[in-house]
Image 1 (cartoon, rainbow, N blue to C red):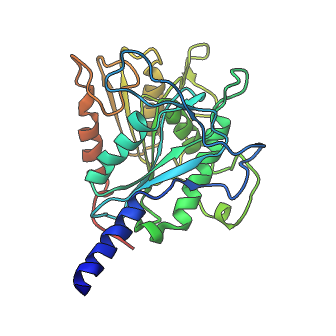
Image 2 (image 1 turned 90 degrees about the vertical axis):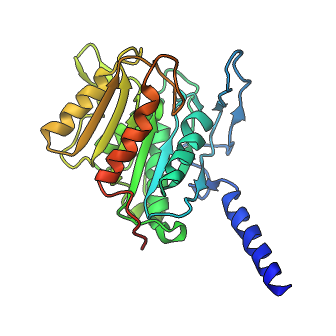
Image 3 (image 1 turned 45 degrees about the vertical axis):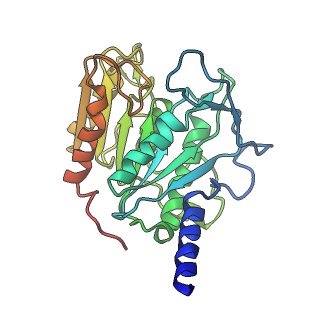
Length: 293
């Protein structure tokens, strides 16, 4: 009887951890905010099967934790897309977390702040939230069974641009130091950029300002398609910058597949093979070995 109770208690405890409420990354108001709203789920778009969730009006960024079982000591922060005005938490968030979990990687899906004003640079708030989230997780790494030197960043679409900006920012925070969390490095140990959005500046035939590859950029895996309206030249030029600096990198540009597919398949396209290629790359870089601090 006692043994059964203990087993039941462990199951309940485990389920509580896995189903815990999203975590705040800022102790109070996020920089420049006057409200704390986790966002509003927008109506589904007609004809989407399966449907895609979109959340807008986020002023209170939160993070959901997806523990791997068993865990290998690697963690990844996921930045979904959404064009900065929205966040897509399933297609480019939890579905990616499930994939990472299957490889022993603990995932953190960040619901970053959105910007509805088209005149304001939409990447600023998400970049602040991403910097804070990386430091927050690394400061508590043992709590989630991950190593401080095996924390990566995965960005989709607009989140991919934010990730590229974080990789390129020279480790200079875009907000004033708040507490001891901000004393912890937010630099990723590796990155995966999936159809990073609007990285190419056609006027200058170069990467958009703020995404130039630095010499200390971590190893990076990039995915894009040739028929994406957000030109694959951004991913190509970012890869070229990595190559010039001798930084380990891998680039896949598929012939078709469009944009916004996440890990889902696209008819008459091989794009859904990218997760297998990314997992192989992570393995060759040593990020799938079972090493827990």
